[in-house]
Length: 190
Image (tube, rainbow, N blue to C red):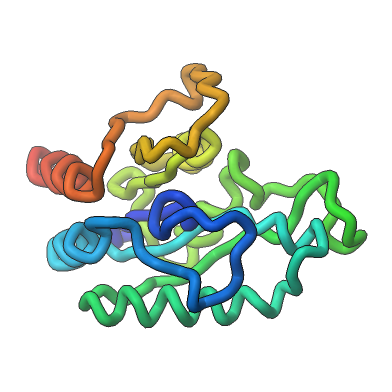
């Protein structure tokens, strides 16, 4: 395990939050993401998306629709000079309407399975990697997987049930701040 990775939640973090959206034309990057991820990539961090996609389980869209989402993210980041290491998603939800997806699983955040699967695929050094998301379920998933965590406080969290396992290592309100903190911590380890 050699690569530091920044695992990003999709909706409300990497991209503007449009609930249950799979229309690539409506996917836009959050303000400041391009430059922040370019800086992280230039310093050796790989970038991956880890996202709960319960719309599949609820029958709101077919799992194949996520291929267009992944392609759009790849193109948006690629245009910024940032290769996307992967788009990893969980299509499950315990109260889903589609039987094949209506279940508890280890990949639905706050469980750590999705982050661990992405880490295995990207040969990630989890101790040097970060999980960045807009809700505490993202933080918990990252902590349980062994990452450092950052809450991107964009207004997405509504419950604020903070426990030791849901306490972010850092909180940021902009993507400039996300990159600054990650890079400062990486520099302090040298």
